[in-house]
Amino acid sequence: MKQQRSYDKEYKIQALKLVEEIGTNKAAKELDVPVNTIYGWQRAQRDGKLDTGTQSPQTAISLAEEVKELRKQIKELTRENRRLKEENEFLEEASAFFAASRRKSAKTAG
Image 1 (tube, rainbow, N blue to C red):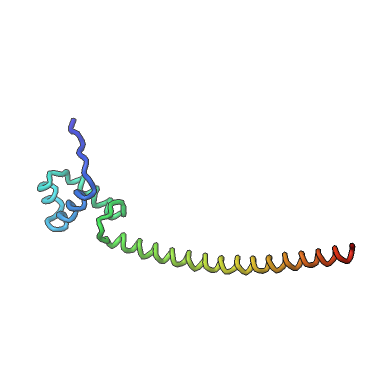
Image 2: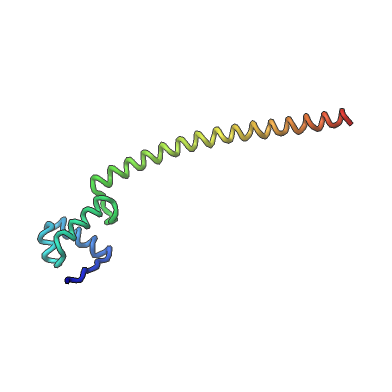
């Protein structure tokens, strides 16, 4: 039974750079790494699970979508924050009004 080798992140990144330069099969042969292992690293890079510092079209699209979604969330949260501040101001005014009303009725009753 062949023991499974372990590769650190930097090795994988360098291997993928070599793949871009000379192709998957040549890189696998030169590095003595199974072709399927390199395919796995490429898939991980495409899926955003292996950050190589470069953008694939898929990760660039997903990042753009993520930025769009985050901007939408910020807009919604800003709107909700504004609404909550207005409600809080109203409640403070109402509380002050009822406190003054209570003091006034306590003076007239006493």
